[in-house]
Image (tube, rainbow, N blue to C red; front, side, top):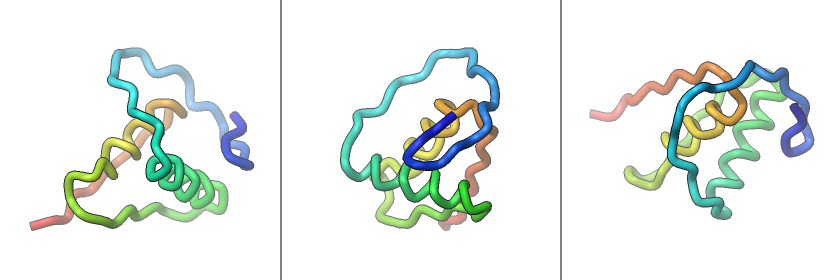
Length: 76
């Protein structure tokens, strides 16, 4: 699968229903950061105020790529 200038192995097909996210410039910027970090074998850390959709953006990208995604919430 080619996405934003990098190639990733397709993980299969996600079987299930989910809500699609609205494509905004912030989500596109997050997806670019995530995919470029995955391309170079790095982890991903999204930072920012609560309630802005960081977790949902990451989970949605994982579903679209059919990749296993683990999210740690370290807030108090």
